[in-house]
Length: 263
Image (tube, rainbow, N blue to C red):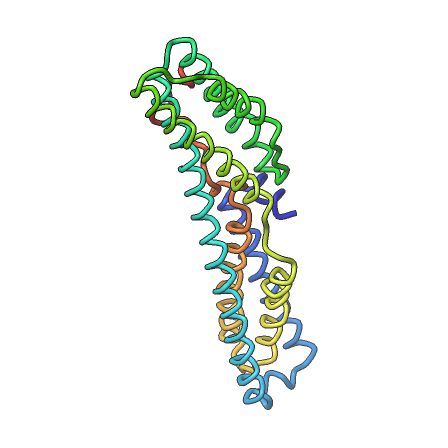
């Protein structure tokens, strides 16, 4: 469900749906409680409700802060992995220039195929939450085969050969990490705490009696807006490859790798 929302709705629309929907439901619930339970308006139980709201609000705030910080850290880690993978691919492309033309051409072909497979095949799959190793496996194996069968003849070739092998091994590790990140999502228990907590905290605000309808609704709506935006952050950050604010494949098109994208 979250993937569908992120991939089919823009950021503004998603904000309206999540935040606006939370506010509308909260206001409607508050109005309903005021009409059906007029005694609540008198505020006879405000002391108890206030303490409960404060306690639940503090606990829920800590949980949301932990979840958002964790997801933001995961997003940054994903961006670092992608940048590192693209950088290693670019370095291999540069290192291969020191090899004889036939070897250089084979390495370049493998790297070109790899970056195209990442952007054109794997990226849409990762956006859909269904990453696959197959798209890049053939090109990665081809690059390994070239380096495994090549014997550097000069000291200069030996130096660049060692660098290329190191970068290729790093690409293999970063590819696995990237695909793992595409499959990860917030654990079910934390999802229940984040979204279920809102279902507990917002209705509690209905029970805090205020005689003025306007002030009551402003109070409920302000709490709903804060919770709505927090849940929006959780929704957006939970899937680093989906939505308008997702991680970009631009690093695979830049620098030394741009040569593989020219017509």
